[in-house]
Every structure is written in C-alpha cells, then in structure tokens.
Image 1 (cartoon, rainbow, N blue to C red):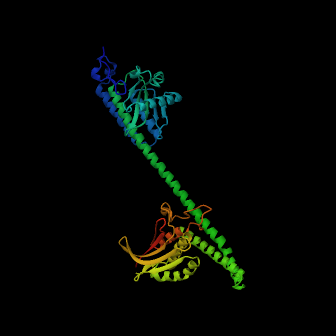
Image 2: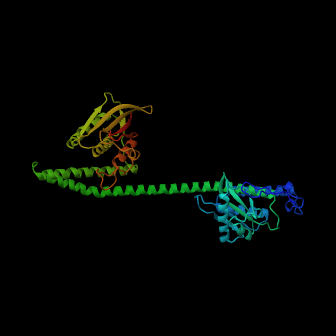
Image 3: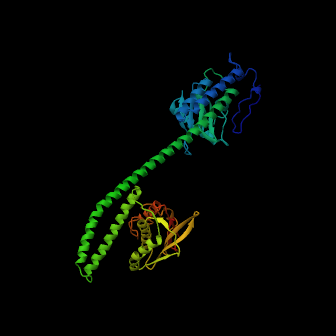
Amino acid sequence: MFPSRRRSKEGIPAPRPAEERPATDPVDMSARDYLDRGARRERSLLSLQELSNELNVRMDLYEIADVALLNILGHFGCSKAALWILPESSGQDAVLVRGQGLNPNIARAIGTLWTRWLTARPGGIVAPVLVSDLKDLRTIPGLELAESNGLALFVPVIARRRFLGLLALGKRVGGEDFGPLELETLQTSINLLGVALENTGLYNRMVESNRRLRKANEHLQELDRLKSEFLNNMNHELRTPLTIMVAYLDSLIAGEPKESRRFEHLRIVREETEKLSGMLLNVLDFSKLLDDELEIRAELGDARASLDTYYEERRPGITADLRELRFTTATEIPPSIFDRDRLVQIVDCLVDNAVKFTPHGSVIHIRVEPTRRDDREWVRIDVEDDGPGIPADSLPHIFESFRQGDGSQTREHRGMGMGLAFARRLAQKMNADLTVESEIGKGARFSIFLPTG
C-alpha cells in the first residue's frame, strides 16, 4: 500500500514527495532511458534562461503569451495549452489570450469556470493544480470539461500577490506524469510570466496615458488657435462699424440742445458704445497676449503718480453709480518696474470687476504701499471692495479665461469673463504678479505686486 496522500488547506491533494513514492513510481523513472536527474535539471535551467531572455525583450501581451506557451510546450512535451488573463475591471471573466490544441469556445468556457473556482478558494491558490488529483472532488465546476479535453494541470499566474490569470497544460505526449522537478520548473516559468505580464501592463498603461495627454494637449492647442483666430476676426469685423457709429453719434449730439431729452438719450447711447468699443479693444489685446504679440514697455517709474491720474479720471463715473472710490498711498513708495498704460489697464479691469459685483453704496479702495514678499522688495497695489465676496470654490478658477462665477444666460452681471484673466496675464508679462483674497460677506482684495528697481 502507498502511504496516505496529504491534502492542502483548500482540500486539493499536494504532490507526493519523492521519498514517499515507491521505487516503481513512474515519476521516479526520471532517466527516461537517456537522461539522469542532473541532465533534466540542467535542461530545465536552460529552458528557464531562454524564457527569461525572451520575456525580457517583449512588451506586447500577445507576444509574451506566444513566447511563454511555446517555451513551456516545448520543454514539457505537451500538445495542448491555454493562457487566460483577467481584465483589470473587477467582476469580469477571464479572457482567452492564446490557446493551442483546444477549441476556442471550449477553451473560453474552461477558463471562465476554473478562474472563478480558483479565485473563490479561501486564501486563493498559487501552486499548480493537477487534474488527476481532483478526481475525488467531482463537484468542481469544469473538471469533467478539462478531463474530456485532455488537460492535465492548471497554474494560477500571480504577480505581487495579485491574480493575473491562469495557464493550463495538456497531458504530455509521452504519457509521463509531472514530477516534482517538472512542477518546480513550471512554477518558476509561471512566475517569470507573471512578472512580465505585470510589467507590460504597467508599461502599456503608461504609454496609453501619455498618448491621451498628448492628444488632449494637441486639442487644447487647436482650441487656443481657433479662439485667437475668432477673437481677431471678431475685433476686426466689429470695430469698423463701431467707429462709424461713434462718429455719427458725436455728430448728432453736437446738434442737440443739452437740455433736451434727445440729447440725454444720445449721450447714454454714446457712453454704452464707448464701453463696447473698450471691451473689444481689450479682447484684441487679450488675443495678442495669448499669441505673445502684445508689446510691453516696462520702465522704472512711480506707480503712485500713474494711478493718481487714473483715480481722478475714474472717480466721477464711480460716484455717479452710487459707489465710493478711494485712493491712498504710503508716504514713501520706491520706484518699480512697470508699463504705465498696461498697469492702468490692469487696475481698470479690477475696478470694473469690483463695480460689477458690488451693490450700490459700496466702497472700492485703491491702495499703494511698499511690501516684502519672498525675500524681495515689491510695490503692492490693492483694489479692495466691501462687497459680498467670492465663493471659496470659485477662487481657484478666478483667473481662468472666459470663466464666470455665474455663466448662465440669466446671470445678473454682464461681461465675457475675460477681464481678470487678461489682467493677470498682463501682470505676468510685466514680471509682476496678481493675487486675490476673499471671504464670503467680507469683500474681495486683488493685489498687484510690482518688482522694484
């Protein structure tokens, strides 16, 4: 009588050690008439070396499957084999990648049944499973299907403790069993295969991610080009009729008594036309800025003097709209580097933004003072209001082009969502910076930092 067979935790009989087999056990007849145990081990090592070298230069899943099956079939002398891979998405059945000597439909069914059974075992199964050792467990799904199609064993493909797939081998052509040395060699081959599949999956996902990022970048560049082209065309198409409209309005206003209602109506139309013309001019400048064509003439100067002139020009209009505009400066302001016209454009955009988003009776404060930031001296220009403030979720996007806090057609505030983006790009073009701080109910403060000379 043979000694009793041991069983694994899963209830699957473990391969019988060589010392427990009788001398007449077929597995111990290892010489096979011309090879001794040492020669077989050497042949196994050469096979593993060849497989390792081949897998090392393959980065395609199907090439790896072909190389692995060819090597394993040749080494063990089997005529049937199949490799199934589990998709990354959980809950999906294994996919037949390569099959040899099996009907594809039958192979798919076998792979589905066996991967479900193996992965459902407590703790999973990592060692080769011999079909002949499972004859007492007739409740295993797919067992009869495997036997009737000449499959001898199944080996889970695992890498970093993750179940990647399953490999099956048919019976050996010479009728020999899979002995301990063959099972060890097969397990090592599968380990090499698992590492190759894992690395290939990571590499392919990286390549695909890079491809998608490249396509997204190309799409964004094309959108930028189309946007710039649209802005240029829109400006050139609209500025000419606006110029003519302004000229005719001036002519009509000049012929009307200032006390008449017609004069007041024409004056309002003239002011709105001038606003529209200014918006279009900003759009044109913004288009040039996007294309890096806007000329900047940054010089060392007194920012306070430039803004004092702007304040005197802008205050009447702000006051007429029932808002208070204040302007204060520190006693000593060091010279800073800026383009005077562009600085006024930036501050004007910030003041316009404050007027747009604050109610009547609000205070808008322009403040100029020296400051220290990042171990450097700067001139800081604040445009601060006491309005409702900016929601926290809008702050990270406040300087994005054409973005508004309320982009709906029924929004309360007018505008194209371009002013703040334009202001920040202008500031950066002058090697300055533009930041924002705000809290709901406590207003907003935009700060321009000009480098000092």
